[in-house]
Image 1 (cartoon, one colour):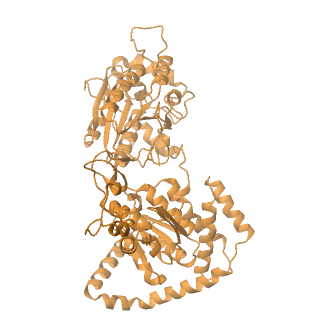
Image 2 (tube, rainbow, N blue to C red):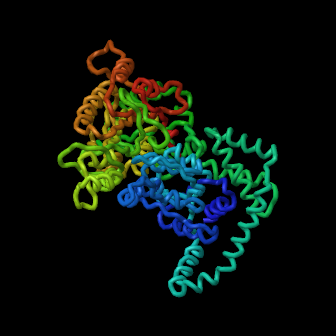
Image 3 (tube, rainbow, N blue to C red):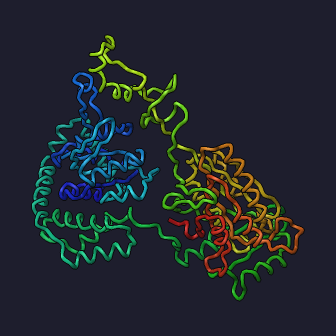
Length: 611
């Protein structure tokens, strides 16, 4: 927790640091650490509960004043209480994105503007936002995470002694909490004195031109958008120097500030490569890896084709290698099954990029918010209604009626405490999370076996499924080769059988890409009509080397051009496409990239998937 604690100290020393984001696994002590800061900083920690409403957070009409006095007065919310204190949001990634964006904007601006229910008010909000999120299922939009000056991970001790010390202190706290506090009171006093001294040192501190130039150079080299990263580094580096008891910042402060301010602002880099030695180890199947095994007949000779890291056997091109293998192995290429390759840390295809959509507007692969048409979902607002039996928003209805109470009672409206007319009625606006479907369309042709790519393809798909999509709504797997186009796993929430499916995936000889695209178009068209509110995504995993025309007996049509033409005409609303190229990086021709352009899809190679 050292870096997380240092981030908190920087925020307490420099009031210009407006946001600290702490990410860590469940049970690492993030919440306890943040709540302990109040006593050290001599400020209150204002907690924002996950089920908070806009009225509770930003303020709303004071109903009591409106009913009794007929005055329009704003009742203060949590943001007003946070003025001069610390604002804390636990599990920030689970909050409504629009609400979280409003909070960060208010914190950065130092004020809150409320325009609602005949209220127009502005009040100050000088606070620091501290947010935590779970590293296992966390996602924040880049625009929101960029509002946090500091982003750090909360790590837990991995050594046995560190874990034992936590257990000992927990037992001591349960036995005598006051005694434990007294034991560490001197350390706490020393820390508070350190913070006070650092604040004084910070008042007259300025960065030299050389250090400012260094900050700008680092942010440019890291390809950071905007200037919040640069400004955050300046604030944090000065706070670090002050905490160290120095009047001037040094190069080491800049380096440490970069590690705290830039990770969440960096763009994902495509084309990450392993070392040549590691890559060769995986591709050649040395050690305990086996490239392939023929299971349709145990008596047949198993194909053993090795190649160097350049992607082909010495002195042979990929087409020659394929032709030689076919002449030697014949039908043995057909129905070959390869084992699953290395499972590795992958990027989330939908986290940092907008999905290019064929015929539809792109959107993120995360679950989206949608207005519910039923009485289910989260209550997010209210609107006028004339329905005879509305989903009544009682609080909004009373607020709308409250400003008219003195006049209505004076006119003899009755002896009711609150007189409500039809014009006051408000119905609830509810919001639900739209579901998503991810269909992996996998090219299972023999050319992938020849180039030792099928094992890597299986490993990549399993990595993506395990790390990002197993907990999503629906996942399906379709395969295509000259033998069959098969939906081996229809879109389903049960993906426990994916490993066995991939492990026993048969490989055909040729690539009927035209027929596969036609099948996908027909299948997804029907699927989207049945699931109108669902976001659907097709992940096409192929080398793009189509060699079978739509009509297998047609020898005049170019299969590749035909498939590209079909791809250009596919237009399914609410379906996003991603193409993963299984071709070797060293190959001069990447037809899969051409398909990505025709499908208006995002394009990745297998190597790009590594986080």
